[in-house]
Length: 395
Image 1 (cartoon, rainbow, N blue to C red):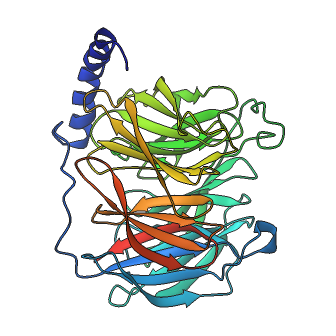
Image 2: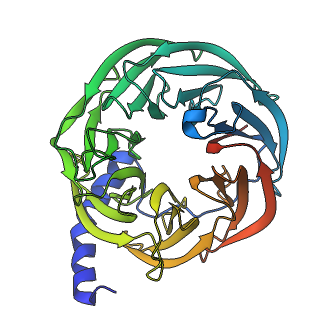
């Protein structure tokens, strides 16, 4: 627990930044409540699964499920085979297109989504200019797709056509810096995610290989990325920044570090996009002595709770976030009921959190309590081979 004097000073420090952040987004500083969305007509879940022997995988492509908004139960709709390692998936803002990167490959694929059935149909596939795309992101306007290329240490910006298909590559940004100390995981730049801040003005790229969190200014008209004045924030040596989540109303970002199994709270200067580390906490309980790597991070819709998945401990770490400063306090660990939870994420209602256990071939459902942050298994387990990511669409 931080001394009260220090906590108050951070509240004061954040005060002006919060107002600037909220004004830039046209919002008040009052966070939205975590209320179920009861007007859903249909909800679909799209699960990407690793497929190759190199990945020790057993999967067979992308699986589509219809999801009950009331119970969280999943019903199979479609299976798309003949795909190589379709991993992280992202939907367009209209939810009429879905995009997949492919582990160890050099391309990205676009699919049309039938909103009446949830079924997918391939639109096209193009080269990204990099290898081993690990995470895609669509800009808020739906005009550009950004891809983090892990093996080649660069970020691709691709145009999107009106029908949702992939257009030409408009930019390829190389990430520069000194590799971290890990002899196998940090031999070069390894960007692991693309995240737009809540305003859509900035793009964050955690780089596992360089121990840095890069920040770019995004030009919504051209799709071009320009480094901020700061350029990047240095993480603790050997951390391996992997994935990030933004607070919905405070100028705060949380970054999960894969190698060190820690989570860092950053304060973000809203006008220039610069970052300052304010706190580092372990994602593991103090009595755990085994091997582990951090995987995924997710925040509740009101920013009160942050969840991190641990591969090795095979758990979801729960943190409560101070409503004034965004600083975290450990609130417990919940077993994922499977091995190697590569992905965790909320459904559109924010009532259910799902854990994709890659090595146990299961997707496990948890009910997330909005008041306490506690995760309770619902008993529903979806069996699918080598699941590594989930995207949700609500219509």
